[in-house]
Amino acid sequence: MGSGENAPHAMLTVARRPMPISLCKSGKRIHYSRHLQQSGMPEIRSCLAIGGIPISEALDVIAKGVHIMVATPGRLMDMLEKKMVTLDICRYLCMDEADRMIDMGFEEDVRTIFSFFKGQRQTLLFSATMPKKIQNFARSALVKPVTINVGRAGAASMNVIQEVEYVKQEAKVVYLLDCLQKTAPPVLIFAEKKQDVDCIHEYLLLKGVEAVAIHGGKDQEERSRAVEAYRNAKKDVLVATDVASKGLDFPNIQHVINYDMPEDVENYVHRIGRTGRSNTKGLATTFVNKTTDQSVLLDLKHLLIEAKQKVPDFLSELCPESEQYLDLGDSHGCSYCGGLGHRITECPKLEAIQSKQASNIGRRDYLSNTAVDY
Image (tube, rainbow, N blue to C red; front, side, top):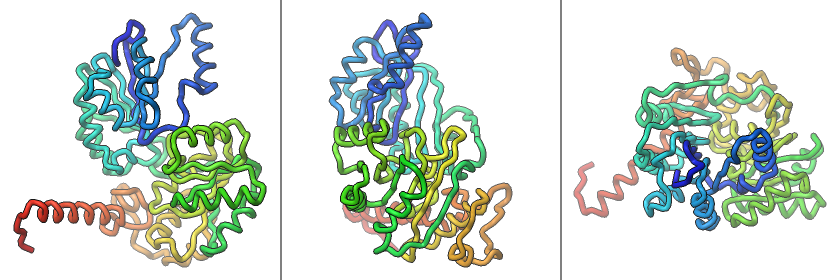
């Protein structure tokens, strides 16, 4: 990747969204480099190419020769098209959270990045959930791909104790303080909306809780400071949107609180996966109420059953056990999104995507003054 005498076999890692911390500056990275040098191995040089960080920082490292480049699709495509970097000698491509990257509309960008490779490469796609759409993408974009599953793709970790509680919308903020007493810090709180993150953060600060917050509305420097303080145990609680549910590894998180149940069960699996890592035990508490979509609650119910967790009464009574959601041949539930509480014919995510595509087609026909018969 780029020129450089010390970069014989470069590796490219594509992240779904910007990482709040430069990997080059982390203590773990420095310690690993020192270990390599003591073993007589050359230092591994890596660079970060994401929005919010000056492109010159990446170019300074690339000019010396770079072994690993961590990038988001947009910034990487910009650098490739302007010929700031080439993939002529890049032999490894790793896509983290591949399912979400495709979900967010980056499929064409990823295929464009593939076209810049000139030699044979090894491509790795990682995700906690691997539904049909990403499997179809892998089959069309890769040569004879091999799928390796550790457990069922999309299943919740057995190391996480999952608790689901019915909490009225207006009582959720106050009940947070009680939930924080369940475990020692660090605690991670997820909310769907940016304004909710800010409100929760402000409330916790007023109650004397050492908390920080991150979401997409904060600039890169502010997010970096917050994550660094949380990772170094200077702060006990991190409040975040789904920006923190993937791609970030915080050691020893004791408790994950879902202030809002996410819109699909995939995000729920990613969120609670922040705790219970490396064979440690963790706790996940999720708030639900009448505003939560019933299809998501059904998925949650059957995810709890599969993980042998306690199912609260209000979820058990949601639908009788005779419901015909089960056994579609060798698979269970929805083969499109991985949800266990519905079939693909009733998949809300697939329906939303089809509606969006239909509306886009209608918009294009309107803008091109093309007569369409309905």
